[in-house]
Length: 114
Length: 115
Image (cartoon, rainbow over all chains, first blue to last red; front, side):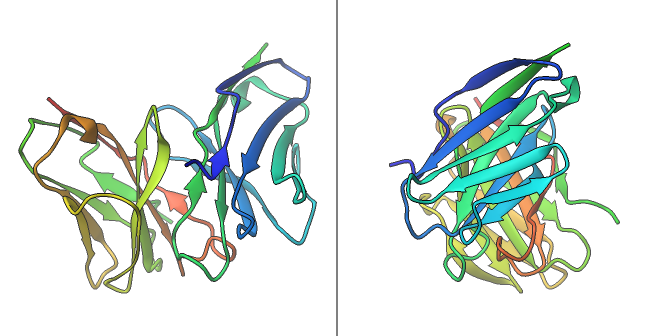
């Protein structure tokens, strides 16, 4: 059973607009969430993270929102740029739980059109 | 600082063979995790090593094994290969292995094809 779900396999956005990528989780023990970006033929690259004690974290054009009651998080990219085109993975872990173990969603492929 | 390196980058094997993949972590990192990425399942955790000890293991059969050396370099081995083992195998390293305090840095992966 998937504990981290990204229900949209793909998303297409116009350059300059907002991209919103969504992620749902089922395990209430998760207390740390991350987003990774992956280009073809490269490994995933860490993008941004959020602890369960927060509901928002910003880093430049990237903002992650966490809604614990809904077990939902989202990544907002504003403004979107063609270089943002990649596969985005949502991941979760529980502090003090399994070390080195991130639970990943299946990813959302973002295409930003010029 | 050099990133995580994985060798080889591409590998073709036939069913029944065994394979060994190598991962060199970022200098100073003692935790190495391995993941399998397939189109249908996404990234799935295989196991994690810290200071030559396996601390955590995912839900994979015993054909998948690994080890870590004193210099933190890690290898994973898959015996009796099956067609379903075709995947991208990713290695990630961090100082402590705790995702809440340390970022996991991924290597480029080894693409394994089983014929």
